[in-house]
Length: 249
Ligand code: GLN
Image (cartoon, rainbow, N blue to C red; front, side, top):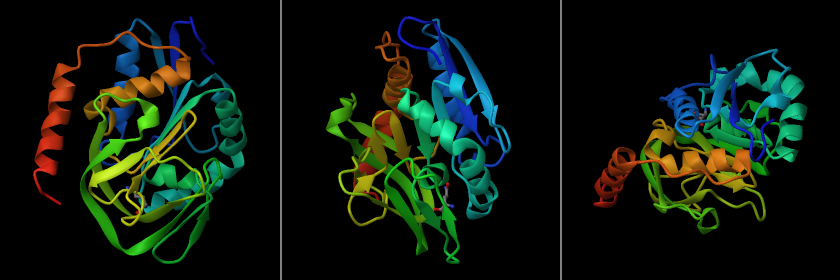
């Protein structure tokens, strides 16, 4: 596990073969490349089913999305081989970014549209239950002020049947300006709990939100990073915000 002053970043990719949809792999590439552009030695450790070793060396965990079928294939392994070392890593300050299906399984449970309840690892105080229709489309969210992000927006693409409800006092990652977010009702999107970030934003998320990518890396390293020239990324971000807030839903 890297800490302030050291020059390496270890990225732990949970279930890369099963939980990886709608461009989620792009988040791994973004974390890896943005670390390298700062002169950090970066490496990616794949943590598939049955892999229990090496979690203690990880600085940033990434957990992508997956259809109900894939979630049903990984939830038991997550409980049996990953839950404790992941909780321990988070206690020590590792960062976690989880998208959609991965985000759901970090909570207490995900109940599918057929009523099957997949237990989660309860790392975050949220619960998710599938509704009758899917929430699909582009999303623009206003990031929670506590994150001090600039730009203050996050953009991405959502496609989920799950409705996630936050426990008392759980801070959302942001509030939706366009789209459905956690549950289509309370206006919240994702969670931001310490160094743990959950979201419904696919796309992939980080290439169009370099400010969030840096926040995740900074939280893992426990220090600020030198800024990069993100004009291309932020131009793409701004165009999506303008397009989506121009009255499309
Ligand atoms: N299967 C979950 C749902 O439908 C997650 C989908 C996803 O990761 N995009 O809500």
